[in-house]
Length: 345
Image (cartoon, helix red, strand yellow):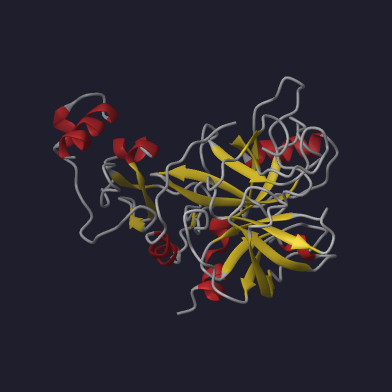
């Protein structure tokens, strides 16, 4: 472990072993995702060294290791702040079972079917009309995260878990006790498009049903980051599939995303509480993207054999248009709101 860390730092510093000898650690324990003091007196956030090379060159202080990975105090992106609720979320995440993760090429664009149990946190919100669908992500034994707009005109009847087939009679079905809508949401601005589904009874966990960790960093993910979205929304043929579909997408800079919508005459206003993502084109020129019926579903990041919930499907312009990325609610911006309702104690 020590040898691997030294080699990593040598590689990042250009192979000079003398530079690794001057590494200084924080006096107090700080773990990945925690706030930390930068040398200029401002507050940064602990991130893996491989994701924050600039801070290594600036000789910022080091945090505690994350497995075999060195972690360093990293400067926040402009306008980003650290949410002190991250520790509560990380504690909950520590109980989530690690699983074997295999990312394959969702919804529209480059699509494949998900394997049974591949996404054990994935829930299907059921309505009286079977053609109305929304996705949701299990985050505890009583709560799922989804989008507020999933409930603007319709009332859900239950949430189904533990299946990748929309009509699976063996799926676990749970009655809904309450929908916690974010009060800031309006259909006009589409801001604060996040909601919690509270179940009447605790979920029975097994290999096919497990909660997902919440992503806590407010730093924008690099555009090369591989993310996965999934859902039972409309597919390339504009049909509602029975199988859960999945696909790979990458973050799109918010400024780029905003500019493309504006250039196309779409009047929207993106904020730091939102993010954009889009995937590669299929042979028919359709970009991997969420579509109708995928709303509220998870956008996830894989790290250390765990999935982290980064975003929730919110809205977009059509499906699979490579000019307009899908727009997602950024989960890390709502940790306080989530914790107040899910982990009050």
